[in-house]
Length: 377
Ligand code: COA
Image (cartoon, rainbow, N blue to C red; front, side, top):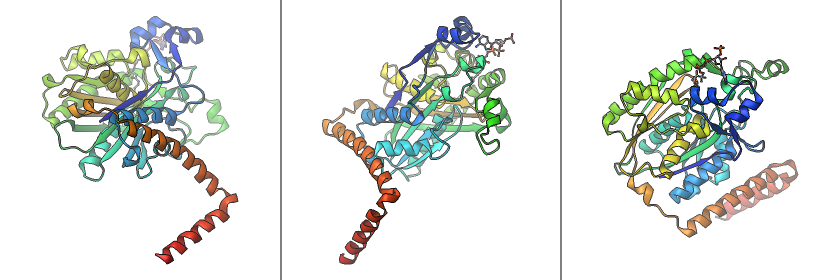
């Protein structure tokens, strides 16, 4: 019922990269289809972008953030190992009653998270779920490795799911993984297997390493299979599909998948030229853009498909609903969201202050006051 995206202002073109390393606009364009990518400012991290995208999704749906039941953020570049980026998003939105968790499924993170969000609603447990895909890949890309430095960009995308009875919405999901390919896309250091040390930093082991050829082969074979699988589950034929919104990793992969499925390239929404590979953010950014450009209309059948580190792959088949296009923001709710976001900020500052040692007396007084009230009741 809502969608939103955020990409950083700073744009780095292929020519900019050619000035910094041994590469060329021609090589990048012909091998990947990328022309530009958006790179986060020094002050920006994954949660900042995720919050912007989430607020846009809530505005589009004209929803009250306080009603959120669950916040899931697909990411491989959380702000910190602990706490999760989802908790930072939940807090900044003022989603005080929501559960929050990060989901790491590489570049398939958003599609995995969407499948989980859908299941959380289908189980009857939750009504309003926010699903975000956000990554700041520029922080884990080795600028001295030209085979990865030219590919990735930063950004975030979000969708809001609400329980409904209508035909629109998620019709089927399909997930897969193959850990034997874990070494093909990996950040070796910084985890429990190889904690950060001066040596790991000196050896640049906190950066992403990728076997591009193997990943290319894996994606071209697996993506058509998972698309067919999810369509079979959804009982939708390939001919009925209006749009395939794939993970934007390489234009040639999209063309290879189209060829294998005997579909025209035009059915695949591509915006890799503008953003590069934004990892978990690429599918929701593409979905948002396609909706904003009015390429997607009510009743259309869409497949979202992701693949990436793990190895992982995932697809969601959905029907775009008329309801999502008809929402118009009520002034009072727009104002309410503004107040909730400000309140969330004040609440955080206050709670941090109140939890600090200087305010123990205040907390004790609060506890006494509560117990007195309980006794009185
Ligand atoms: N600029 C110029 N030359 C480059 C380069 C760059 N940025 N990066 C690599 N090269 C060179 C290589 O050094 C190699 O040179 P050599 O033949 O002299 O050894 C040559 O280009 C070919 O390299 P190769 O890695 O075989 O290129 P490729 O055609 O396989 O394309 C990728 C490389 C990365 C674009 C491609 O493999 C790919 O897109 N793979 C999928 C990656 C992906 O999707 N990752 C994300 C998954 S979520």
